Length: 253
Ligand code: PGA
Image (cartoon, rainbow, N blue to C red):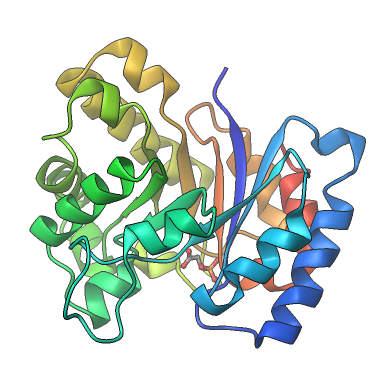
């Protein structure tokens, strides 16, 4: 049985005060009996991590993620954050290769490969994002692109390391646009990703890797998306900024 995961991606939103309020509402609502088997994650700004860790306390189904980390261990990289710094704060997961990072900060396949490796070395779980822009889908090149994103940054990992990764498929045209991939489009790509993993590693690894869908997930569409056999949950941006809405999504499995 793969984990069911609802991961909120707060992006560059909330002050610490606002973030603490949101996190404490989420942690409170996550106590609901029906969520005991659901992994609830909040990917928060770095400045919030330490305080929100305290808010999470000993909740067993709530986890914390960072939104990026640098690919080098340490050094003269003004403004950057290292895997060791995140590990030291008790971060569970690190989102890597979000389309906004690829687009605005020109993150390359090679950098994302190093970031994934360094996150794993620091005993944290990478949430590796992939997904195509609209033009790529219109050219019917979306499968090739996603395969390239995975193979260029992940497939050098050995099987033991690769098996620790979470994948998030986020079609760029669905992020923050209100346009969601249809259930068929999501399932088709998730199935393709799992098949690609099976070919490069093994069926058993492919079966155990959680693959999240991201892109305008909301309480109204989460249930049908999450009922797709290869969709193991969501990476949720806008709708994770409201505790009740986010928890409603987490209850959609
Ligand atoms: P969205 O963002 O839910 O606001 O579309 C998803 C994401 O960027 O991870």
